[in-house]
Amino acid sequence: MSNKITVFCRCAVLVLPLISAACSSIVTPVVSTNVSPSETPSVASTNVYLTEAPPMVSPTETSSVVSTNVSPTETPPVDGFVTSPLATYTNVEYGFEFDYPAQVEVRVEGKPFQLLVYTESADPFYIRATRDFLPGDVTYFLDTSSTGELVYGPCVWLTYYLPKGYADATGASQPIYALQMKAEDVLYSVVFYNQDSLTQVQGQILSTFRLLE
Image (tube, rainbow, N blue to C red):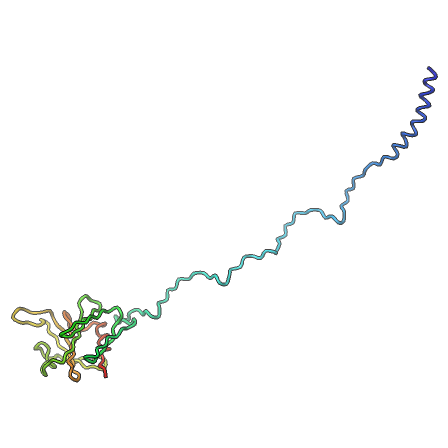
């Protein structure tokens, strides 16, 4: 028994130095809490980057504007007179012409020659020209003498008013207001039915009546 104890003790004496040496060679790892100077901590930035500029309005894109201006080619009537672009009727055969608003309708009828001029009413007025007349036809209209003169532009017209129109054995016509003028060998007549004077538009048209040279 004593021999076994003796052997164990010797073994322990030999083994203990080895265990001690082994333990001294084990290095306990140390966790460093220092931050490397080359590594910066990640921080959630609240700065607004200016790499994206706010959207700009293109100079070629402008807002739509509705114009309330009146086109210069269309002028509204002033005191009943139409100042819109005018058309011109010219008759070389009887040597006259006149201007009229574009919305006025002018119709030509022949033998005997006459123009039907439609203004603001459904009933036209008539412009007639003839070389077939008697001397008394210049101062009388349907056997009615002149009531005066009316000057429009360069023309001087004799005026006639027939309140009962023209009466014959079969009856009477509508009231008639008429103008007549003789120039050279042509007798010009302007006849209005159911009127005792000219409207403003009719007067505007007649004021442009002129003889061709």
